Image 1 (cartoon, rainbow, N blue to C red):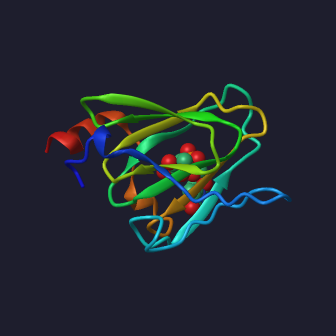
Image 2 (cartoon, rainbow, N blue to C red):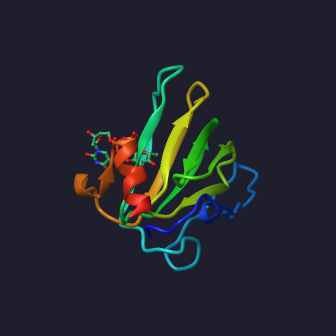
Length: 138
Ligand code: T46
């Protein structure tokens, strides 16, 4: 989705089941996420002041969840930038392909859970910002 814009990045509400012993949120293929989840990974033990991301993906779709704590996700389509603050384990940010993302301002002990539509493939990354702008213009 070369033509994707930051307005295609949306926060979705996930289920939240209250329980006297704590809460549970469930994410299911077909029902919750608009893609089949092929990979799950999570970022944790992130040192204070550190940032992650700093790249775009050509085909990958992702759902980012602040499973613990909070952080900011700055998305950029080459023209417009938007910043989302994620701080609820029952909300997720959907990011389509063709969007540059940077994550920062991680709170201490925060965990970024990511559900991804594809297996890991370095060839799916655009890691140079100038190349990203060129890719979006082509
Ligand atoms: C995004 C943010 C939230 C793997 O071997 N397998 C994997 O599935 C992943 C995601 C990474 N890696 C290796 C490849 C690199 O040597 O881990 C290292 C760091 O990977 P990356 O540059 O992808 O890390 P982040 O945390 O900056 O970015 C990742 C996602 O790539 C990105 O799409 O939105 O997490």
